Amino acid sequence: MLSEAKEQALKRLSYIEGHLAGVRKMMEEDQYCVDILKQTYAVRRAIEKMESILLEGHLHTCVVEGIKEGREEEVVGELRDLYILANK
Image 1 (cartoon, rainbow, N blue to C red):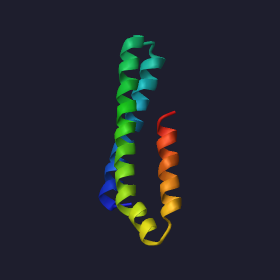
Image 2: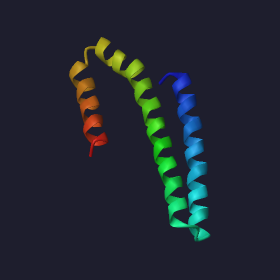
Image 3: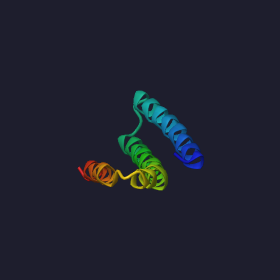
Image 4: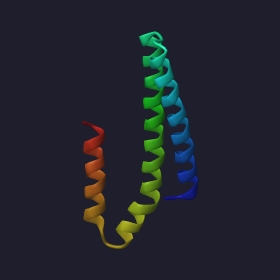
């Protein structure tokens, strides 16, 4: 993974962890459900952004290396599996 992508993903993950802790606290304090749901939607968007960062890094490193090494079918299979998983 590119070091820049890794750094961005780790920052995003720290944000997600903090946000989830906030959601837990809101639930423990019996805060309004709509307010909690708004926060969970924000967490979901942050996870999607982190996934995007990871996928872009993967495409620029591992995929390119795999194709250069002659593992085209394996690489395409992995990408296909990710696509199917993301659309379930």
